[in-house]
Each structure stands twice: as structure tokens, then as C-alpha cells.
Length: 386
Image 1: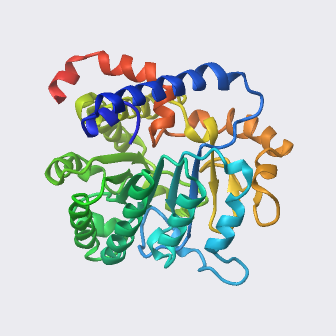
Image 2 (image 1 turned 135 degrees about the vertical axis):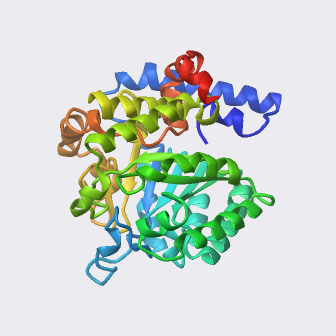
């Protein structure tokens, strides 16, 4: 949950509203007035943990499942090893943690990992998981336990399941017959679970050449199921092991025009997508005009990624900086050579073309004035979308 969308998700009490407003203004001031003066980046407030690189789908847009399974030479971190790494004071200021993969629910100790993080970070505000929802039984069992632990610690719990289309289209993209039916079973179970626990549930739809014709069905699916959909741009990344799948992923020519048109339709739906409408508008500008990225990135503001093999990254497009089992995370993050790469290889060369696929609370606080100005400005297309 992020920025102004918090007010749309549920009714806030006067006290909660005042606290939320105060935190937002404080975060905006810190992001725009204090952080720009710093020479070194802050310790991370946001951490993504790839708990595994294993996956039980056979996607045509992601080849992470083709990688070798963990072995003695490249093991997955144990819960104890994860805890040893994050005990570094470098991670002391974490407010948001995302558990990702691969498929996180393939870890038989996923609940233990979440419990350890909740215990280690008493000031944690949000814990989120990205999953494909399969198998549904495991997803629901783990979600129930983690949601209960988060409620006990007063931590927001979010769960996003991948859904790149409906019916056979989704089955074709993920390479598994009957996958859509299984994901829908997971969604149904999670919707029922929301009656017991305050779970923020969403779907993540990756836009590629394979689902362009079916993207228009997703807003209707969202309305029907009562589940918000986050649309992200398909990318070729080393972590995804999908360099050979670029023809299925990257849009060109008429396909790109169709994608831009879809994004502009999303951007016009301000009442539906709130601050994400601005993200869709900027993404359309990047694809259509080659405009540089203008929205903030929580990784560059103060984020990091920890891999299942103990490797540390500045962001999702960054090569590994070092291994946290061999060297402390803080020493790796603030290494002079790594910081030099962060200023040049990332900020100057990579960041301008990196698509904004998130708009979480950290990013929204930084871009608050842009969001408010965008939401206040009305065009004829906006009225039609409403």
C-alpha cells in the first residue's frame, strides 16, 4: 500500500489520518530536502530478499526455472544464515521487506523466515510477498500463518500473485495447463482469508508481446474479483535468465503502439489507479518518446536486494556487489568501488531507461507533489475513463 492510495483502501480514524499525514510530510521533506545533500547513500529502509531461485512454472517470459537447483556449490541460505547476515547494523533502519523469488512458497521454511524478520525488526512497517500462488494449498497455509504473525506485530502484510492474462492465455504464457484455475483457487482462498486478517491482496500482470491482445480483459477481471491489478513492463534481465526470450517480451513497431495506447488508457483512470495512473503515464512517455525516467526509485533512495545465495545488489538491474557470507553487507554496500559504480554505471547509464514498475510508499512520498498535480489535472480522456 502506498501514498495517497492508503486513503482509498479503508477509512482512517482522525488519529490515524493525522499520523499518516505527518509521516507523509516528514518523508517528503526528508526525501527532497535532506537526502539530496548526502554524498553517500543512506542505509536501506527497503529490502528485497530473493529467498529462492527455484520456480514451479515454465514461463515463456522468464527462464529462472531453467537454472540449476541449489546444490553444495550454490546452496540457498538457511534461516540462520539469513539472520546472521541481517544482524549487521547496516540493516537496522529497515521499514519494508519484500520476499521474492523464484517462487517463495517452494521454501518449506518460508514462515520461519518471515517470523525471524518480524522478530529482528520490531519497527518494521510492512512485509510483502510476490508469488505465483502455486500450489494453492501451500500458499494459503503460509499466508495464514504469516498474516497472523504480522497482525500480532502490527505490520502491514501484502501478497501479490502473478496473473498475466485469463484462462488459456495465462496457461500458455506460464507453460502449465490448468495454471489459471489453480491461481484462481489461490485468489479465492486469499479473499476468504481477508475476512480474518488485514491482507492487502493484488495481482501482478507483466505486459509483453504474448498478452497484448488480452490486457484489456484485466481491468474487468479486477472489478469482478475485487482485486487490484498492478501492470508492469516485461524486461530482459540476467536474474530472470530470459535473454533468449526477448522476442516474446520486448515490444516493437505496432505492438509497442498498442502497448502505449493501453498504458494511456490506464493513465486516464485516475480514480481507479490513483498514483499508479501517473506511473502508467510516465511509462507510456518512455516507450513512445524515449523520455528518461522521471519518477523516483526506492532502491536508489535507500534500498537493497539480498539474494538466496547471499549476494548483495543495489537494485534489480545491478550486478552482484559481493557475498554477505564472505564480507559484511554494510562494507559491501559502501565499498568505494561499488559506490563509484552506483554513481556512474547505475545513476547515469541505467536509471534513465529503467521502467517504473512500482510506486510504493517510499517512492510516493518523494513524488508527492507530482502525484497531487497529476491527479488534480483533468483531461477529456480522464472524464471518459471515469
